[in-house]
Image (cartoon, rainbow, N blue to C red; front, top):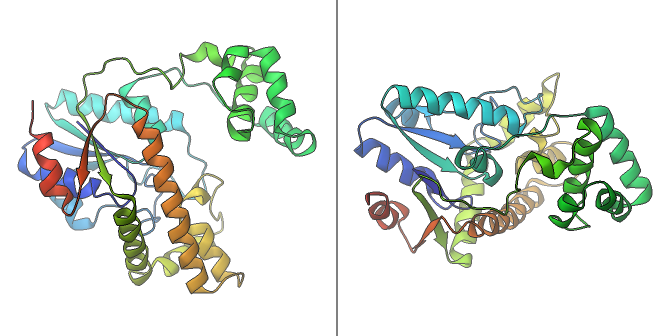
Length: 298
């Protein structure tokens, strides 16, 4: 079972309600930032009480100073799901990171990493521009090039990194994320009216600040390793580091976190809406009461 939706949509509350009502159900976090230890408040990790009531998986897997990859997540998820199956348990996936979810619903061959190749490409993209690198990708792997916008630097660099580093076209590693074959997963999406979700996001950010997010970021920022490139992508951390280093007031940083979280929620919903296998329920006031009946269906 999979529960998807944008941040602050109530996914975790719905998952907890279902898991507590069904013996053997355990929650699997599908979140690129909850994998980091001590990044608790800003990533909205489940509380200690929730973890005591229902077993949770794929949380606190890495140090914040480490880069954590989708391949590492896929490997860890496969182990958890195999163990759950062997014990006769039921996984309830709470998914905010679409790519991580696809490694579970649609297992794929994930290419390796070639840091030296990537560094050289990042230097080139600054000097030549992303369009020039995309033209190179068209020559080397036209199938991959056709799957992405020429202006998407992150994807162009990754495709070239794999193509040049592995000696294989990037597209040879799988059909891509635009394919949605049938799967044996019940996938339910929580959808809010845009204004209502924006209000929930703002309220949640203010609760996080009140719960000690600034102090959490300060402690992490003071650690010798700091935050890795991937950990810094977590919403709220970069913005509050700007505040701690005097580049923004707390009010300004908080407003920026709210704005960027709202923008991120839009991107999340767009990602999930492309998947025709997800059954959507529009939430008006109470995610648990309104979504739980869909999860009870066989």
